[in-house]
Length: 161
Image (cartoon, rainbow, N blue to C red; front, side, top):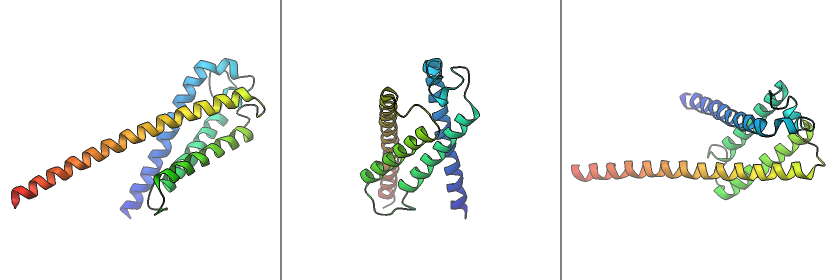
């Protein structure tokens, strides 16, 4: 039961961390391009002055979907035998499709605007690369920590034996 509570709190934390990062990125985008984008993007309807409630709710929904996908694809709880490469490919495919649907459903930008799609794919690719690099750095740090703990355990075991 405690594990379920911890995983629920971990999931909630993941959702809100993802949402917070997403909002900060959109604040930066809003400062940079909000005024220029307000006439053709529902995301920047108020220019660089504010975000609409609809935009904030849409970003939260996207954060929720990203977090659920991350939880399903990157924990062994749901999928036992799948390579990390396939998990990453599925994750990025699902997120790309989801964002594309959001673009169309919520009129984030005109679907016939090639420059908007180019900007989307470039920014998505850059964010994905940063995300992968941060994940790799975190994984290496955790592995180093575990290896040091294992080494201390082995040394303590040798000292006793």
